[in-house]
Length: 492
Image (cartoon, rainbow, N blue to C red; front, top):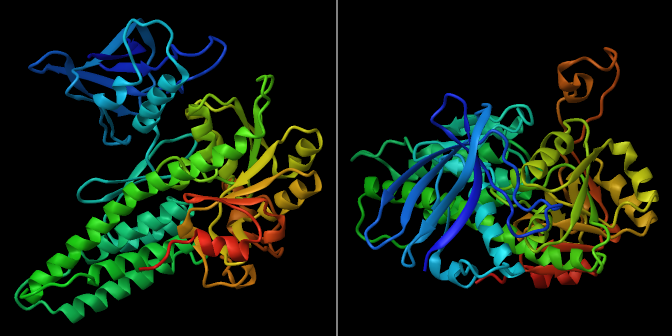
């Protein structure tokens, strides 16, 4: 069997680089299936493989803005025993074996079934969704979200102080993403610890504790940060090691830290996709069976792929829903004062082909009153044992509005964001941010000198306003004191 995927491509004038613009062959012309990646370079290198078919490497770079000419068709073919693979240092590697694709694609058999289109869309989404965090082998590479949406810039973090600063300044943001970033920060903080015959394990452990505690101080509200750092610390010291010299034991602990950080990187993607699969079941109940209008979702701040490693939390049901053919439209609150909704949520939804409309925070009530919102989905930085939810400042107001207009209010929360040690939201620490974020929004002074500024990063929405909490293990409904306990994994 040979698998063929067809893309429309264009070549910038005077350049050997090929531009990739995927087109949808599986939907009506009026609908968008593939995201339109603007200004993405594709250099095409093929080499013949014995046994038939072709294989190649597709290298994607987000910086080209060339003019285009000579459109044609590009076909990737893969032998039955091989696999279709997209690789790039910026975008996530995606690989699906031909055995999986065999059930989805039969060349020259006419119309493609919906299930086949979903399979292709999953492959494409995994290949091209921008990665928040990658490991280069020597540094943690972060997408600098302070530069979005006008610039796509990556920064390489090489020590724990740089990682602390990146987390504090919101270069990397979103509870799951900063947890994974901090895990790499732990490794970066201890990797240069002396490893010779004079090395002392107790001194190494002291250094490990210093790095972990330091990183945990960067942002106190997101429970994922402390959870990830403590997980790394525990794993580094775990495992029985017999007859190892101190310098060998230190090397083993360093390797275990990096191993666990890489494992967390992969886990986050799987968790968010599972969360999305559970969340989409709620969205499917809201849709128009006749397909007359899209399902209208309102979200606050950014809890999408750029707040995690990939897929996101609040936006994961939307991405999975799009893969399943649901018609969706998102209302994105701009989210003052740092505008994560207008800068980041709108950016990533547009890049992934999801219709999105940005509104000022104060417009949510008006939009809801006009019947334009079917559901609200937000993320969270911490959920208390009773179901109280801490999320970006302004979420509480959205929840109150949703209750008034009888709109379901869903919270997307990986289990790592649920803190069963806190009885209720009054115990959640709330980070206070720099007043300049309000007084000098977008770099321009917008308030008089000398006035008081109150700038909490988060507020707490009481459990009584939450319709359901979506986790990777399923949808949790009130009473949360009971249901959250059952949702949490049992400790061995």
